[in-house]
Length: 432
Image 1: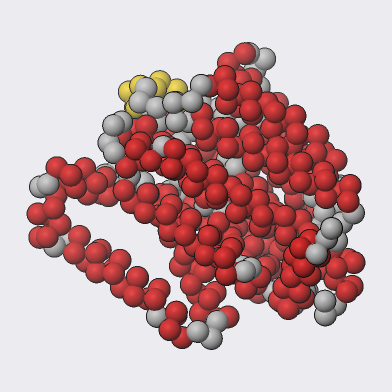
Image 2: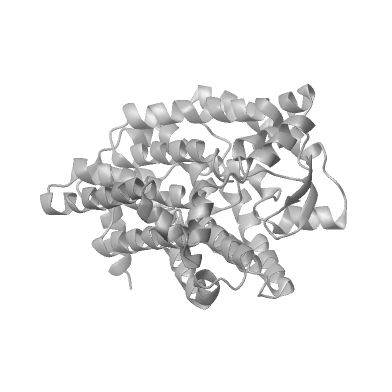
């Protein structure tokens, strides 16, 4: 290895490695079981048992990994304020009710763990943690493929449109979207790993198109586009650089064709009309209007707490039920306001926006820049889709914030990071 001090500085001992691996194993078990439960075709009891197992593994492991040490004084101050505010959000509205507690423990998209996820920022800022994270991303992606194969008929055939849409959404947002981070940091990975990540993101994008999930298609397209520009900067392979523009040209041509008579013709075909209608359908204006009417000035400022709901009669939810009160909204920044008010959103912005600036403009390596891009994607995705969830995608936002604020990581060169990852891989392969 070119710089042994990097390995000494960012490596961890055996005990810490075991705890870190246990944390991610428990987390993967929990989120994978949750994704399975959303299909409504796997026994909820089995899924809940697996989630309990995951919780028993990742919760104690997480507390053992937390270090109450933040070097950057600005981040330290804002993060303490944010944690205190989030603690208040949890306390306000918390119910000691069976159904509510079950929701808080088992629904990864509404659970109390969403509010505890920022604590992952307190994990040590060491390259070995990032190395393990990349492995976790690939494992989650392979589980995604396995789940897709098991439920392939539901994904491709319109047995139940609502259920099929839900399966695509939950599987992708929970398991495959994080593969985009591997593409953004492709210079550190082998060709096989990059190929797996690229294939999974493309598969996610295609399934989103098949099920007309506009927000999900946007989430998958963002890392594809961004990783291409990263590739353009770092790669000297001119032939491969032409492949992506060709794909963009095809997409643009399809977009132009959309407004022409050929699309009108396709719209008359029963097999395509539903998809084309979905592309221009306004599915959130009504619920947003109810949201605006329900919230009072005090609610806008401080939110309604962890059990915050708004009056929304007659609107069909994601499970096909007619709702009266809703706990969330498809426009995710409004969900943040519903629970914690504008104060919660503002604190998040005050933490994340400087992280983006530091990662993009003051760092010396692609890892920090990719972390900044990932945070930026999160802020953009707050409008079209719910992304503040207890999933790997959201945990990576806080991990990325830690990377961007870390002076030690930001000052590393790409060659030092690549050498470290390669050195660790060789050490593992040659270990007895």
